[in-house]
Length: 178
Image (cartoon, rainbow, N blue to C red):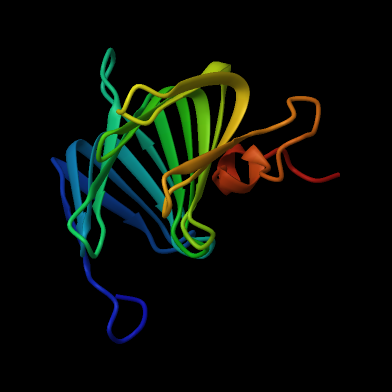
């Protein structure tokens, strides 16, 4: 744990490497993550300590999964082709065939940005869909889901997202500044 009182992160994998010069850890092969009320599975997890950014990738033909259980015992499960958690600011970028299941609510899109501090999920897709599990379904280019109240709002597709996908990329993936 980074701070006293934080839950430890337990990693199980076929191999784990840590580069002391760059503070980057790489876990490979059947990676299982456990951290308090959260768990995840991936084939590879690369984590940059300094920026608190991770990149979770699956095996060929599979998806990455993250699961979180809230204080009321409700489970949120996110599956995607790629998941990029930003643990320091409690945000997440899920990319490719994203499905979020929050109790009976199912959200789908090409990509989803989660913001735990604001209890929101911005679903972007072609189309993005939201199904409350009670017969109410909507689809649009962008949907803002309020994860704490199970409400949603359709967003104007012509207005850019407040999220920047580059904020979730590892340093080695970013273009060098000129």
